[in-house]
Length: 69
Image (cartoon, rainbow, N blue to C red):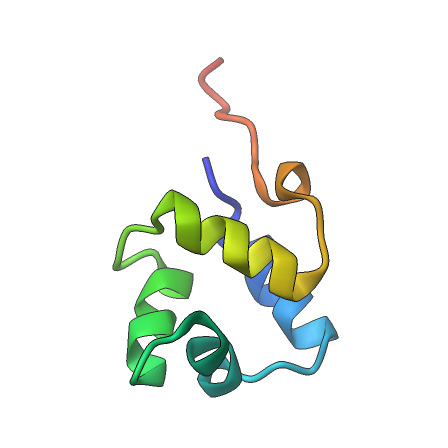
């Protein structure tokens, strides 16, 4: 499962706004990215990889283990 809280924290650490992240990902609106970060919109694999690259972080650090395992 993707750790959306970690993505938000890393984005803020880098000083990247939601609008900037949306632009870097090719979205026309920052709302589209906001929906991803809030978990309203599903995060596709290709977008997930782009986010990790933008944040300069290993994908594994953005995944949280399912507590049911």
